[in-house]
Amino acid sequence: MNSTEMLRILDSISRDRKIEKSVLVKDLEQAMVSAARKHFSTLDAEEFACVVDPLSGQMSITRHGQPLDLPPEAFGRIAAQTFKQVMIQRFRDDERSSVFTEFSKRVGELTTGVVQRYEGGSMVVTIDRAEAFMPRSEQIPGEQFQPGDRVRCLILDVRDVGNQVKIVLSRGHPDFIKRLFEVEVPEVSERIIDIKAMAREPGYRTKVAVASVDSKVDPVGACVGVRGSRIKNIVDELNGEKIDIVRWNESSQILIQNALKPAEVKEISLCFELGRATVVVGDDQLSLAIGKRGQNVRLAARLTGWDVDILTPEEFTKGLEILSATLQTVPGVTEEMVDKLAALGMVSVFDIEEVGADVLVTELGIDAASAEQCVETSARRAKEVAEQQQKDKEEQERRRREEEAAGRQLLEGGPLPEGNAPGAEAGVPPTLSGTDDQRAADILGQG
Image (cartoon, rainbow, N blue to C red; front, side, top):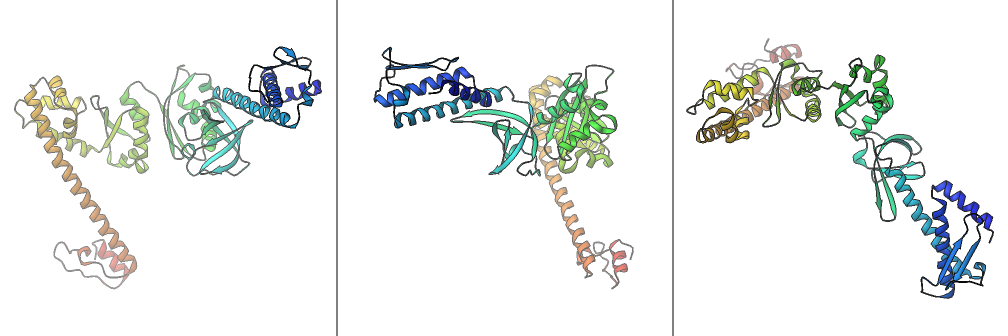
């Protein structure tokens, strides 16, 4: 056996696979012992021993402590096959252990890999010398990569599963955004700007709350960059996902107000007992505050940690009036007590039903019987209000369907349903002309 060639091969494997050479030498010794046992058909694990000099590569095999006269080359084909199998298996085990150790230290890091293929919705990516996968749940909705594309992602988790190491990647995790900010915004990586909170819906929108430890550094301006250069790089990496930079504030009211931007907030009432924030916005700001499919208010709630309810001034005032009228029917409850509850963020009969009697006893100083009566009365009134709201909602839906039907009928040029004809509700018979202009005028009430 060529000792020099053997050492050269071990050095090459150690360098390529990042395995310690001493570990490979031990594997070689163990494989040689297995080959000797196979050749002599022995089951005694202590009968043979092998020592390989890591400097010269000289190999010495002993049997019961005495040097073995038979050279390894004379062990035969079956023993050689055993030696080969043991070496391959132990090399694989060492490589798996090396990969697990290396990537376990890199969890949470940003890395770049090459896309290989898709398997059952999961994307397989090669990173350095290891193969990782990105589950569908960690991908950004709508993104699709082709084999050979380079992809930047976050090392989310590393698991040792049986005979393989599973490296889990992510582009949908909030920490992926955080690492991108550390790359693009030096102040974040230098800890001058701190990312206090983050809420994300991958592929659609992200809200990031930032604060600065240096009063001379504007956290929002630094993250946005000159003419939006820094934030643009992050948005481009995320294929157009919107990112809102929010200024952090220790005051929950100010933080909620900032988180709901670009909507303008008129008033915020916090109920610490329920963890709920009731936010009052103008009618023209309502849709902006709620956002598309409720996205803006949902992300604001997750960012601030408060359950956020958006109301118009009319709805807020109506809720307070119902609360006041309901509670003042209970003997001993005054208007001042109702005002105190409103100041504590309990602005509707639904809130009184949720907080329970103990809170009313503590905050208002009333007896337990009166508190129970307040809760029961509020619960009954809340049920009535909920039923009325459901009826109103159904009525609005009915009207909307009727308007849509009338619009479709107008476009098709046919006669309108009698119930939708102008003046039908007032008992006026519909008088529609045959021309489209007159028909439109009739619909608008101008005929």
